[in-house]
Structures are given as structure tokens and as C-alpha cells.
Image (cartoon, rainbow, N blue to C red; front, side):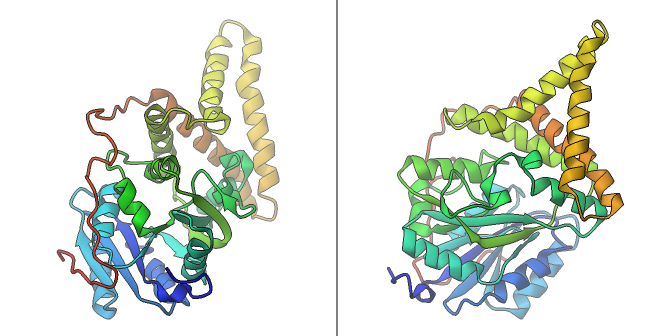
Length: 351
């Protein structure tokens, strides 16, 4: 293994699960190719069955840069895309990047250095939400506040150190092989779930604020609600699968949903109970106004309903989650052990 002051001697395989990313894919890939990393680099795009022009964009990118390769992901599911791409990875560091995320300058070099210095299994940084429309900017305000996401360090920042989970992640490939990659049964929360398994096997998950990924938020109430409903649904699946993985921060949204529902319905019988939903609405209105200072009035007006959408959709997803995993499949995950190429050995994907 290279010394911490020579991280560029290690190669990096960037794996990207791609589905309907026509709008941001080229920008996201450019942020990778423009990194100040002078070691070996490859970018593997695992393409799901997109309904827009994503595949055309991907083919143009691959034709313009020999470091970009394409693999098919017929199911379109994120964990399967990741495992397919990881299975093609040629280098000893594997970085996950999404098709709507933009790496900050120095991201990959910082990751390689941090892996070498800490001996961590996975390192990651801040998910920095940044919108381009008023609605996206309102979501970004919510996602960067404790009111919106509780105490999640990878969204709020903080001191470098060990963490439960990080955003996306840059992995030592040996640890990916050891845990068998992503559990393909988890359509959401697959990052959190794998980080739990890494830590259970003695690996370290390390947060460093010097690594930042600009994230483009959802653009409508419908897509935001769907996203957070799925987050809540699958976070409960993780809680069922891994006992002790839940805490008060994750329980706050379902408790709020239950209390608001009881207050709203019970108020029909005993009116003072209507104070419960009224208090919640007052709190998010005041909180939303406070966290959006400096934003245009249109954005500030959207922040409270955005907060309510995130809280209530997440909580409802958690409370109504009925997803049951097949218990006859144990770790390593259901896709079986990964077979990665030897470091430095290039493999061509099926496209």
C-alpha cells in the first residue's frame, strides 16, 4: 500500500448507477474527469432502462474519453447497478458517484489520502444540496438544516472522524469484496445498510468535511414526497434487518406523523387535540422562515411545505413499511461475492 503522501500511486474506479440522468450526467462526469488526480482513473457507467436521452449522452461521453466504460443494468435498480460496475472495477479504490452529483475539486485525491491515513474501509464527505429553481433551492435549505434532516453529519458538516454512514463513499476494494458488495434486496438505504455491515466486520467508516458532493434536489412536491416515502420505507427495513441500528433521530418523523394524525382526528371529538397539528405547522413555518434567510421570498414561502413533505412522507413510509426480506439469504448479499478485476487490469463491459 502506498504511503499517505503518495496517494496518486493508487488507481481509482468510479462507479455510477445511471437512470434518467439526461439533464445532469455530462456535468457530473466532467466533475470527475477534471479532478486533480494523476493516477490511473476509470469511470464505469451502469446504465438502467432510461426513458430519456441518457443512453445517448453516455455513449457520447464514452466515445470522447477512453477512461469511460458502459455496462448494462437491465433492472434499473441502484444496488444491482453498483454491483455490476464494481464487478468491472480494475483498481484498488472504488468511488461511488451518482449521475446528479458533482464532485468538489480535490475530492478523489482527498479520498485516497484519507483512506491511506486512516485505514478506513469507506470514506465520504458532505452531501451539499444546491438547487437551480425556486423549489430546488427550498429543498436545499431544508436538507442543510437540522429541522429538515436532524443531526446527519454528512448533510450538515462537522469534524472529521468515525461515522455511522457517509454520503456515497470511496472504498478500499478489499472491504467491498469482504462484505460481498451491496445487498441487492435494498432498493433504498443500501448505503446505510452496507456501512452497517462494514462496521460490524470491524471496518471503519470515516467522515471528512473536505470531501463535498454538490447534490441536485428533486424538483417537485410529488417527486420529493416519493423520494422521502421510500427513504422511510427502507430505513425501517434496515431497522428490522439490523437490530440496534435505529435511534431517536430516525423515530422522530413517524412519531410526528402519528401525533398529527391523532390530533387531527381526535380533534373532531375533543377540540384541544387540534393544538398538536397546529403546533407542528407553526413550528415548521417559523423554522422554515429562519433557515431560509437570504433567499428570495418565493423560495422562503416554499420551505415550510417542503419541510412538511419531507417529514410526513418519511414518517408515513416508515409506519406503513411492509417490505420483508427473504431470510433464507444471508450475508454476503443476495448477488453473491463480487469478482473484481486485478488492479490495473482493464475489463470491457457488455456495451
